Image (cartoon, helix red, strand yellow):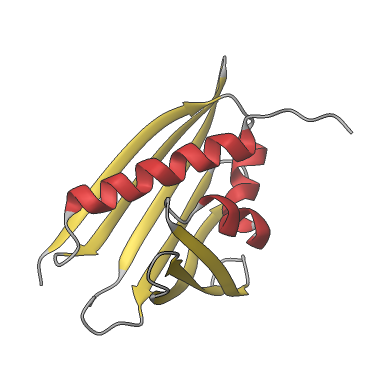
Length: 148
């Protein structure tokens, strides 16, 4: 089976700790991960190595949802996250794997993401566009410093 891979690199004005939390906390994930035009619901989240998650995205215009879930493969606090994702829809076969690397730099955190195993029926440019929108949402969540 042929699959696709996408990669992203950003520098965010935030700490690795805050960005790491955005990936492993339910409320944060639903806030930033769905691309524009979608809402998200986390049905299950056990953010530990070997733990699983299940979530769904809903197209706000059509109301159509697609669910997916996976397993946490690697969780190195504030440094590295690796997880799988598999769609419930049999027309979107295979298992994707996402690797997130965080590195503190002088002006914030360098964020590198690679998602592999993307089903070939999902055009790479559509996946890239979705991730780009999600990363804008992530920056809006983690960059503000709001004191107590």
